[in-house]
Image: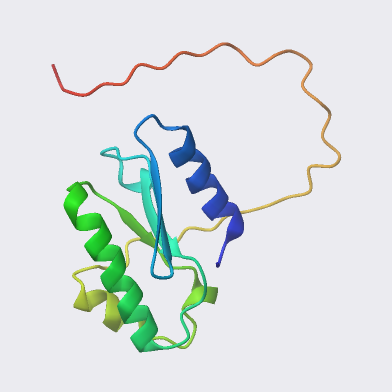
Amino acid sequence: MGNQFWAQFLRYCAERSNRGSIRLIDGIEAAWVNSALIINNATYLRTPAESDEELRARLSAACADAAPYGLPWALFLHSGCVSGCNVEGLVGEFGLAHYLEVEVMTGDVAGLNPPTRPAPSVSFRRVDSRA
């Protein structure tokens, strides 16, 4: 898997959503919150694709998995997982297009002090309609 930090974050969000789901299908992982926000419905490669044929099969599996949900979704292709593959050409075959680059920065947190006060209490309310 390309960027473990990003995958862990996406999985974390899906696990904590009362509508979330995590699906492992043919070399891909779909970690979805199942919301209308595209970045919350994420699919990514679990291991590098070794060839165009392998990437094509995974793209096909990702699209087939997403289709029944009718929600916007994002396919994250870390450059380390698709090196040597014709990514632009292959994603076009499935009606997908490059949208943006996601970079995950990590840092050394060893020097940070613990919080001086407890985190505030927060409540959430799901909005299901515009009404």
